[in-house]
Image (cartoon, rainbow, N blue to C red; front, side, top):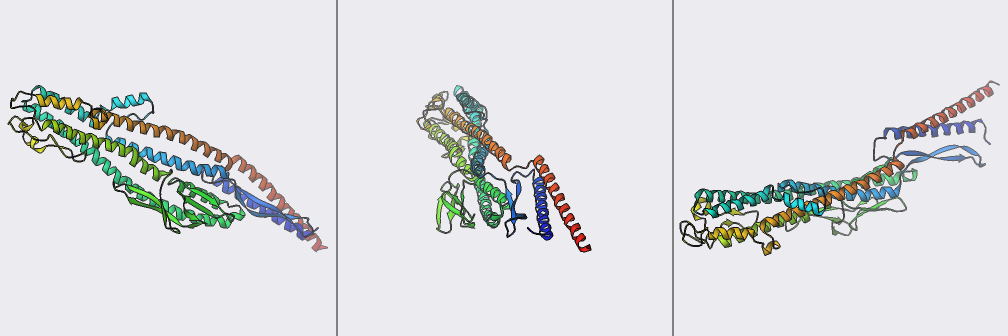
Length: 469
């Protein structure tokens, strides 16, 4: 058993441990509103002298209270949520650019029916309707110049709507490419930052990790928002992070990155490259990058193809009927529309320059409306190329399908938000800072500090007594 010097050393170690506890509680309280912070506890161990007797206490590190299972689940669910959020955002932008009100509230047969009805209220749907009505009017009076002018006006408005929608979707594809390029740069910067934080975490892991472990978890969750990641630690607490089976961080060092390249359709495709093996894998899984790519290449692309198919079918079908007709001046053989798809569909300039050239008769009888009636019949007839639907029906079907895709994403995102929120609440129960608990700890450490100080004061008095003898 030691003497007064040993007692003084015991009191001093207790004083230091209590001070560390007070400081840690203060750090916890200051981070009470920091969602990425895990509350910390002082790691202490008893000290012994050579005889095995107690020799005070030693602070060996600071421990963050984390649940590794919850942390891993949140990394995965962050990827899922980011994927759905950006998929939804892209479809919502597409809806705005379409200029068409569609149902996006539910994925039910009733919603499908509502979307079909809404398909006739505005945008291309209204263009079809107004063009059909103008054609009906001119079929009643095929020699009427005003009715012919109205027909050309409504036809031009319809083609403008096709052109505008295609231009907007082309611009959206370019904007998405820009967004993806920016995300690739940000994700690569985050890979570098995660590597640096991982090195720091490895250095301090033997002492509990503390802030370094919090920072690493935050970086991993941020990276998972860009793409699905898999990570593992070795026996030295060095991390390896993989994306699509390729390592981008190995033993804390950066060995890979994201890359982007344009495909044949002008869309940016994202891949992962490992610099050690010089191997590349196309990005799959979840995350914001994949959400943007899949929304662009599936639902948006399907809608765009449907609109172009309708435009092509309209051009070919109307021209096949119109060119066999006879105009008021006796000419024949003119197309009604020019172009090949939604990007360049237009009314024949010859007709715009002279409305008399519209070919509505089957012969030189000016009052004959056979071709006008046949044009109406073609618009009302199901087309094999459009799935045995009329042009207007096919458009409404495309809008309804798009609406259901958006409704489905909305529902999936709502479910995902519940899962993510629940996991965050569970983690907060483990790692979150409780002010009541921290105040209790402060009082406990304060009393221990006061007691240690009192012990030092007592030992000092004893020393003074001995020196005065």
